[in-house]
Picture (cartoon, rainbow, N blue to C red):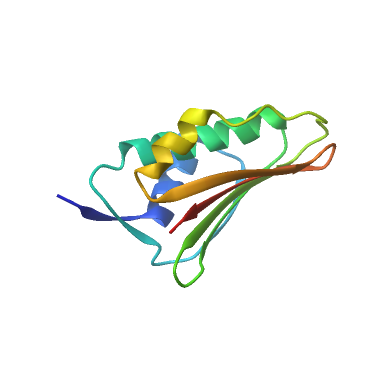
Length: 118
């Protein structure tokens, strides 16, 4: 049975649990209908861990309602010039939530992981 979950609350709970040094910009009412939220939490944790491995600087997390979809953007400034690929399992896990993930980066400047929930 599907239930509504609030992406904003999930991100805030993960931030607190990890004692993360992060700037948040999270819109309200970003609700998903899901059967089980465990893989969603695992996916967001993976993305945060991926970004924090690239830098010891503050992480930036934004959540935006784009009419027909939600965008979860997790980014970090970094001096790294090479970025490991995201795990293929991440895309598989996110399919359950009708979501896709994309890594954008510029060597020596930033890494940004954008998850789009459709």
